[in-house]
Length: 251
Ligand code: PGA
Image 1: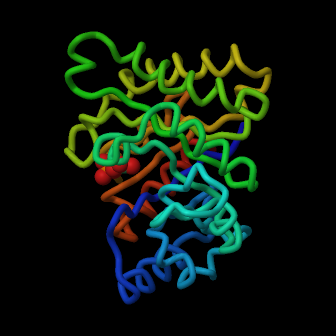
Image 2: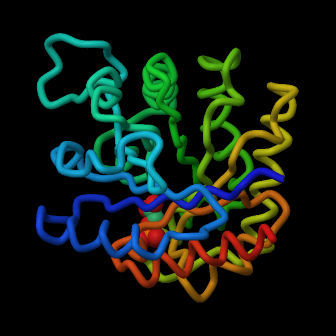
């Protein structure tokens, strides 16, 4: 069975001092962890966190990547630049970027392509809003979001990570039940299965108020291969408990 993947998404949080303390505490508690662990940090801190370069027990990730290679794109950070800093994962299409920065399915697919071209694993986020769930449109929405990425990256789709993050569960303390999450993960798995013979290889993460208390029951679901953790990744004891839950549920 593949190891679970627990990725922290620090979002726009941190400081040089706080990052140092957090990473030290997480690294100190990682011994014996039976999963892949990563933190996706704000771009300015990539150079501070070079101790986490690809290959460390805690992998380094970014929260976004440009769809472009280089040039006149003020404010953007390219996949090539991230690669120079040992970045292993890049979140693409997080709902906060779709919502506040107008990212479309097509742009998210291009960002995934740019990451893959540089050997960075895109963590492709999909998820429905509360209104979409209440209108019974969850399946349609997540399938449309993933289809765009498959359309552009079909030949290497088994190299991506997918994160199912119901928008109504992000930062709200409301978590999808393990059954609700599994239901959507099964839909995504079968969509991947139709696109690649290696769909079992793809990690499908759950994200949205995952914490030390609910991680084990979510991670016990057959198609939940890990978590994308926001708030709880900023506290070392909480993040480590989720990592431990991933190890136990694998045993
Ligand atoms: P949360 O965020 O764990 O704070 O809900 C998850 C995410 O947005 O990736």
